[in-house]
Length: 217
Image (cartoon, rainbow, N blue to C red):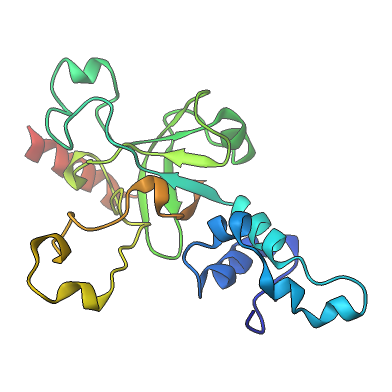
């Protein structure tokens, strides 16, 4: 384990601790559960009393934020037919983030509020729906929302990244060539963490929403 990995320890510095844990390892939340923790066996603190519980620390700081879940859309086929008349009877017609009632309460978020979802990769602004069926410590947005459909800022992929090996781009084979939106992990295995806060749209945000609505019509 590199020096400084567990430096931010005060409770108010969860985000900083998570970013340090995630720096050398984009799958910090997964490794906090399945890693064999060989570094703990080699920890010199063990010669005094007990080694530092590095695996448990990584899991703890990862669990303070929200798991970002972007499954296939329930109503459309990707972005197609999402705003059709009959589909609008089943959803609100704008990008929606789903949050558990208890998580919403801790952040003073009400149903249909504007919220900002963010991490060190990026952020977006959308509406929120409080959903009892959502898991605690998880935010869900069904994928395929076009930006003009109601994002004042960013888009549903803004908090995520795609990492590929340069060696996989050579050889000319169709199944190992990079193509935008056709190469990347799904939402259930990105191990991406985000946070959420209530957001007050600016005048520029509202103009963006109105412009997008006119273009859609």
